[in-house]
Length: 244
Image 1 (cartoon, rainbow, N blue to C red):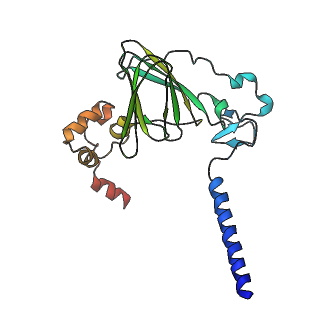
Image 2: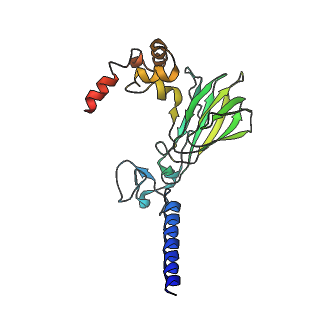
Image 3: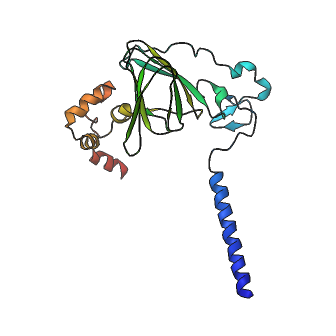
């Protein structure tokens, strides 16, 4: 009988531990809002601070806080890529704070490219309004999933995966985008390697890309004038001496 009671106590302890683990896992994500809304403001006029923003006093909120105009304005595609993504996130539309959504419009000139990039904080759904686009996704095992999109097509780009779109038509193209985050962020692959400040060390890039330093310098020059030279005197020895 004593042995049975001991086993029963151990089983209860194990169940309690499992329940605590499940509770922790299910509550480890961002919490649900505890108020109707939190229109973000840069300077506090209330005591509530959520997601890096002070909440505008609800008594001062009007319908205008929930409106954003100008989404119909075409992005400036007069650039080297021939495309422009106009992101409407919490920085441009403070009412999105705590709501977990954002939008963008992507405009393409003929043969324009929305360069390979990723969004670290949100998945994306991409809907083609006009034009014909070649789009692709790169998985973590480096498999490419690519397709041709036309008007009315939609595609999903999972959070954190590299993706891109290329206008393969002779006319302008347009897509509307939704994100599952108020601040999805964007990391351009090329700029993230060759356009950083300070520059990534030459030793890293020459070994990673299996090329001579002259190639790295040429690639850097495409993204910032300050990176035309080598890594501005930065070396492994310099970094080691600074860390000591």
